[in-house]
Amino acid sequence: MIEKNSYASILDQYFQSDIMSIHIKAGTQLSLKQGGPGAREMKLVGNIMTQQEVKTIIATLHKEVECRDDATIEIERNLSTVIQMGNYRIVIVYPPLSDDYEITVVRPVKRLTFDDYHIDNTLVELLKNKAQGILVAGSPGSGKTTFAQALIDMYVDQKKIVKTIEAPRDLQVSDDVVQYSFSHGTHDEVRDILLLSRPDFTVYDEVRNQADFVLYKDLRLTGIGLIGVIHATKAIDSIQRFIGVVSLGMIPQVIDTIIFIQEGAIHTVYTLSFTVKTPSGMMSEDLARPVVEVKNFFSGQLVYELYSFGEQVVVMPLDDLNPEKLQSGSLKLASLYIEEYLSQRVQYEYGIDIKDNTLDIYVPYEEKGSLIGKGGDTVRELEKELGMHVSIKTFEYDILGQTVRIIKPHNMLWKKKKRFRYK
Image (tube, rainbow, N blue to C red; front, side, top):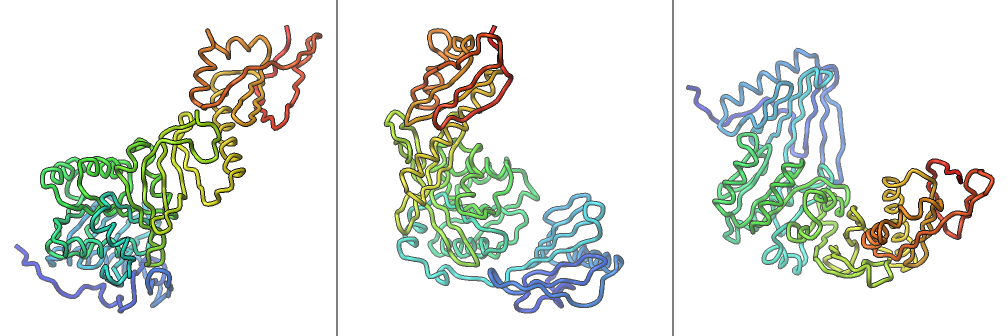
């Protein structure tokens, strides 16, 4: 049996104090990425590496895994391998998945404490005592995981029971924190373990695919505090990735706080709440519906509304609270939904005209009855979906059998289908 120890790695020679990643590919020079979030620089070093040289490094890394007690193979597939070795996360890709042998090694450059972020006292209070469904969002390399580690340290200092879900396990945490990996267990197994052990907080690094979103939802709805690390280019994008997995009314129960990290610092903090009201930009009280409000935590300003419109979930930005602009956006949304609705039900030319809270639909005369429906059922269904009054009107016809002569009322939107002739 091989005795495992920690000793120097072949990778140590490349990692100076400010090197965050190295990129090795056969047929190219070795690339070093140095600096931290917001201040990165790439440089090339050494000679062009041959395929044999890269394969030798790969073989050496596998031998190190066998001999080190801080190294594990987290993911192993036919054409790729992910190794966690100390602070190094190593991704190896083989041909033909990659066009040649490739090694990428990433390590954390800087470890920050919770206090290093100089967080506003009101946000500290929220994170320590109120927030339970937190998303830490940002683009790759923005510092999301570094902030998540700082949160973990803060919760551990509060004597909270903290566990992590990682693939691979590359969070640098104290021995008090238990780290689980999907590389060695299924989502169902991890779910059962967490539900039975009931930690105070679980850090989910990273929420990537459908199974991750479902597990995040399930754990959060059981009352477990969750911090999800998720890729997003904007803070609101992290919510949109849950739409379809989580029903609209449940979103604030699953996610109550979003912290967007940019260039290693907290850039935006949103909080979510649920209410029933008429969405901004819609004029009639008859349009009241369940709405998820997204507010800027520091200013209290309402910045987004999420609500159902027909069969769609709308994410409406409210940064510009110009009533005319909001109403115009709502009418455009209504027109798009109506076009989709009618496209699935009619095969003839029609027109729609939206004014205030009234929708006029123009159809050929002999199609009017079918669109109204028996006893007006179809119209009532459409009115219920849209929250608008719907009136079915007809085109004017040329008696001699010419194609329909279309009159375009003010602000009419047209959808051209099959030409209809008067018979």
